[in-house]
Amino acid sequence: MDDFLIIGGGIAGVSAAARLSHLGRVTLLEAEDHLAHHASGRSAALFEPNYGLPPVVALSLASDDHHRRANGGVLSPRGLMIVATQLLRDAFEHEAAVMNLARISPAEARAMVPILRADALEHAAYAEHAWDLDTDKLIQDFQREAKANGAKVLTGARVTAIRRTSAGWEADTATCTHSARIIVNAAGAWVDEVARMAGVAPLGFTPYRRSMARIPAPGGHDIRAWPMIFGAGETWYAKPDAGALIVSPAEEHLMDPHDAWADDMVLAEGLARYEEMVTEPVTRLLASWAGLRTFAPDRVLVIGQDPVEPAFFWLAGQGGYGFQTAPAASRLAADLIGGGAPELDATTVAALSPARFG
Image (cartoon, rainbow, N blue to C red; front, side, top):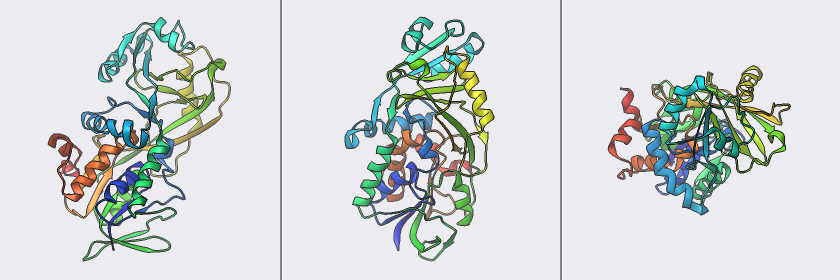
């Protein structure tokens, strides 16, 4: 029997496997044929620690040192810009304040991103405190740590049934039955389904689709130094990526858990909003895809023992913050499971606990 059975092989599950591997025997079960297949594999890959509600920001700030230093770090400079027409001034002012961005002139914004339209751009703000995050390296670093401590990481291992036993839990896959004292539910969009299988009350997580398109570098520009750009009100965003530009309509469409794909109409509408602010039209797509961002009812991560079934541990609701919060979220999970004193303050720990839902 293992000490910990982790269900889900995205960044939440893999980081938890690394942390818990120092405390006991770990098996991680991932339903797909490789890790980070769903939301984790389709991330915008940005570390912006001021993004999100206060408990999310606390996790991101507590993850900063790990992102910069562990295993050589995973961050590289990017920067963040918000742009707006006059009609979206209120949203612009709010978002610039929340994310601690400094107002710059439209001319300064166009000097950084020359395709911004002079006749459309009325407001702009910028900060350097946003970084590209090497998501693959972070996943691999955590997986390497887990395996070095004897953890088993199994892919193609979809859980089909879960049973409570006198000693803990049993979980069936197509080929094997796994047993452990504690289940860690890190199943992304499927966390409520895993809870139901285990006879644990679901908490009401909601998956939302977000689509993305990769387009050629606009106008043949060298875009490597461009910041990530948000349209005010998060009506679209664009980010340089390996010589191309990723553009997203930043939609949140309610979905059932599934292997998501981009909606062509939604993508076209989002690209049109992007085109309203730039001089270069989108003439072709290099690729398109979508992922599910799964939120708890209050849009804050859920990290802690189930209030009714303490041997069932929630590590869920990462939304769009999974990678940037993973070091601190997994550390908190290990502290709570292992009985250590959390590094985070008590108010934040309580705000993340599943007990907050009563």
